[in-house]
Length: 245
Image 1 (cartoon, rainbow, N blue to C red):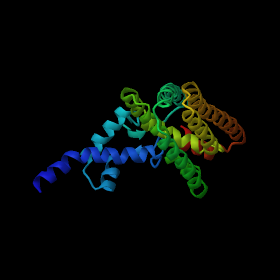
Image 2 (cartoon, rainbow, N blue to C red; image 1 turned 45 degrees about the horizontal axis):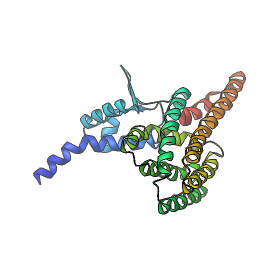
Image 3 (cartoon, rainbow, N blue to C red; image 1 turned 45 degrees about the vertical axis):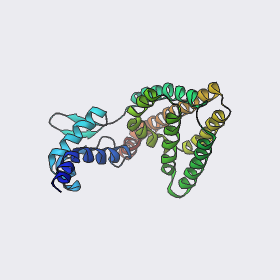
């Protein structure tokens, strides 16, 4: 019993870290929102110490920023941050798809197709975010199938920030449906065992996400400018920060 209690205490900071990280990645804590140690400690039923340790780790992960004298905040991603992350993702996933084309099994490809179709059905009942889990599992399956553990490790190091971007992109009008079709095209290329086509299609998919984000940002900027002219821009600004900042 004493050993179990000691183990629980040792693992407590890690458990708090995982809980807070999960909520940040799932956008339950919005970009730019303040993370109050006392509030989190009370909510999780722990002292402030494991919360402080968790926030320090999340700062190292790039998911939290600390402002002297103001406290800890959920990290915000500028559009340039998004572009740079997507550029890295495109290169890594392009290589993963190329390698996976000769290694992924037919059984896995069939499961991925079923997963995507189930995700689209979920989307019909719960909105665009219903496709998020299927999207994440699809890309993680390709990373696993590439057979290169060092490449997989590099991709995992970006996983949480990429998942935050997935939320911001999937809410764009039509993006979930477009992603579904693009994913099916990637499966087709993998099924054909064509490394060039598999890499091309997954790179095109990620570039399309970037282009849709760029278009959405441009539309927001125009709308924001118009609202400023009318003197009524505050609500629109806060809505965009929740999803794209």
